[in-house]
Image (cartoon, rainbow, N blue to C red):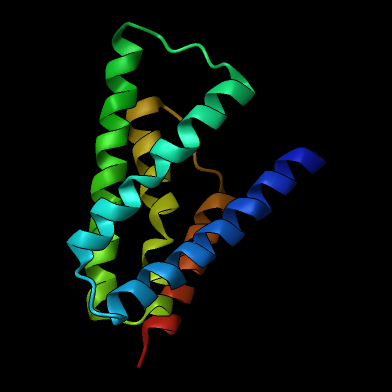
Length: 138
């Protein structure tokens, strides 16, 4: 892994870690999950212009666009469900539990995209699942 990829990965980990704490804090202050969701969903409107200017991405106007929009819908639903779960349980438990979504991605990538899961990936998912079980024990 090159240093730029490592940097972006670490920044994502830090951003998502802070995100979970801030969302939980908002729900602890009495703000409903749906209100948190709607308010936090406005944040990308602040970031999108900067991303566009910084990267000038090509946005396809074909079937790929539908695929991207569908991915956005599922990501948005996942975000809503995490916030709803954070209303009811500790942030450490919920964020740990939902962090095993790469296992679902791995399985679906094998089934739908013809990708292959080598033994290291399978062992990694099993260890992650074990970690989530340990973190969620109360």
